Length: 155
Image 1: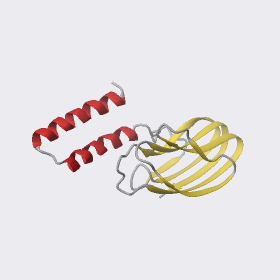
Image 2: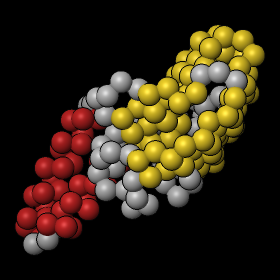
Image 3: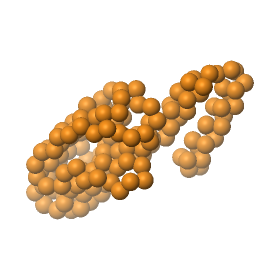
Image 4: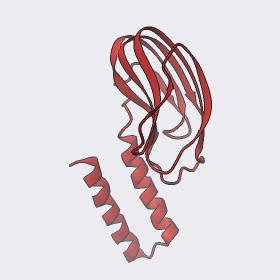
């Protein structure tokens, strides 16, 4: 069963249970947000598949990631999710050091249906604070025959 179908079934079940038990509107929205966050976490690249070491922060949107790549071609979704109401607020601070020895690497921010925004794709440092809109937001790295390293910290 696809993740979308699972979320729909869980949501319908949640509304049914909450209606019968007398949940308030805020309680229903909190439960729905939890379900949506769980579905969003499934989009992240699993720790066993990552090329480097990831330390989780206070939620799936924050933490640190460090990796050394050798001729790597793939995309890793490192941080993010699909929260409707993120408890830690809508702002995240990103610091990224990227060293490109060979090939290409692009650190990006993907938000909803919008085209991904490239944060950095050459050797150097990137620092910024991003305000996340509601819905799906992911920070990742897209590599093509990439040899080099990345140090990424999101708070």
